[in-house]
Image (cartoon, rainbow, N blue to C red; front, side, top):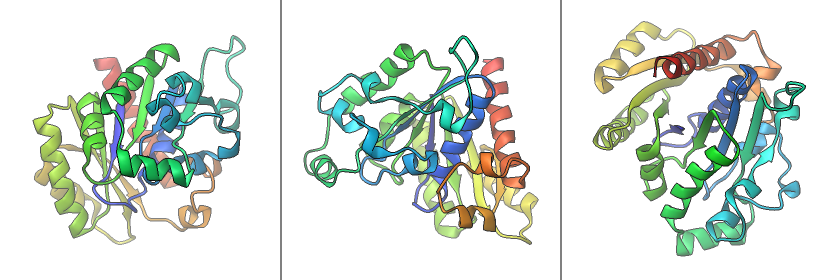
Length: 258
């Protein structure tokens, strides 16, 4: 179970999560992605998933209207390509959150049973036989974020080379340590040309006492794409894609070692 989190919005968290999930699936794994950013869902856009075809969303599960697997959609063929002839793997599933304004307002007004979300995260891994479940969290710190962090085998913190991000991320790092997350990894995203990458790496690793697994460049191609597709599929040879592939190798090696 891998949670991706950022202290503030605008770090590229959802784009990074979607592309990592796609690369993990392309490596032959069964992968699920769940959008727990219920207040401002959006990762489905990166996957090119049409919300109008979704009979159920995470919100329906949280209100007891369906099983968690009923809100999971197989997006393998669109995002990864054809599965093995036996149909078992690779697989990529998406559990979106609802874009319905009434559903979002109800969550904001009434909240939801965090224990039910906890059960659902474990159930979907078992019922879909997932190798990896990536949780795209809401930026900042709230009850859902704390649950996701506490349940995670790996927490990936994504930040920009920005003073507010540096200071805010330190809060999340401290929370993760108190919650005894087994593995904490850091990704520095949107690095402008000309920045001293090794200096940034040393600064972040020294401040957080955590491994920086990628330093990802700010690039015009991502801006032009505008979250309208999977970067790793459009630009397979780009330095940004190579950086994400490095994260995937790190995740796979960590699983093998474990």
